[in-house]
Image (cartoon, rainbow, N blue to C red; front, side, top):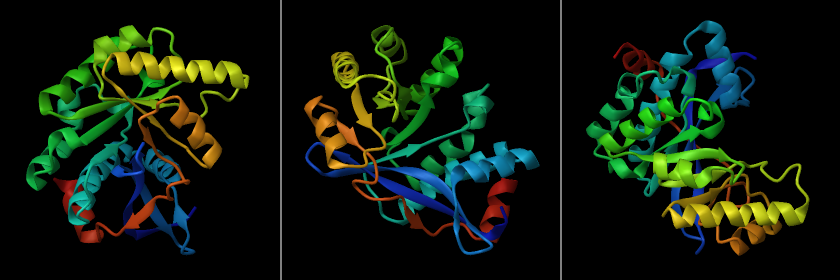
Length: 244
């Protein structure tokens, strides 16, 4: 897919609480295609992988998310994804993010790093190192793609995240009764550890009602609005950022 390299944007999608109050945003990368259409983050990172610049691009996007958040006068939490395969040394890989937070004076605890559980299910040492880095820098941690209650209590006690993010398809292969029971188990275990639960991919009122009944704390999805474009980073800024 052809990309217009003059525009690399940060899109933000609202995160809501149980009262219907906006409490933060999740940042997404988007680019403008040559035909004027919007290219999603997955396609962007596939192209970056082919060009072997995904490490540099991901680090740039971390800084861009923070800068967009501040310059757009947004408030609340800012949830940031990252390419977990590169985090052998979090203090190196995330140093640009740390510098952006310090430079813009964003409250460190408002910066939430999304760590996909599936990427680290068999590498607890690495997951612990990321969690320790987050705590040392004052960042918050979200354990992403949680789809099971098995071993969750012990994991939360070990990692101590601020948030559990439900896998958007956790109930895909379950009957409604089992899905409801599992959802309640995950929420109860998380709340017992003082961890808030966030449901992603909430698309309709029926889903929202199920999550509300299960005492889920926060919600994100098209029911509350699509990711919105926040113009950021021209060519000169990108070159400057990538060379820093």
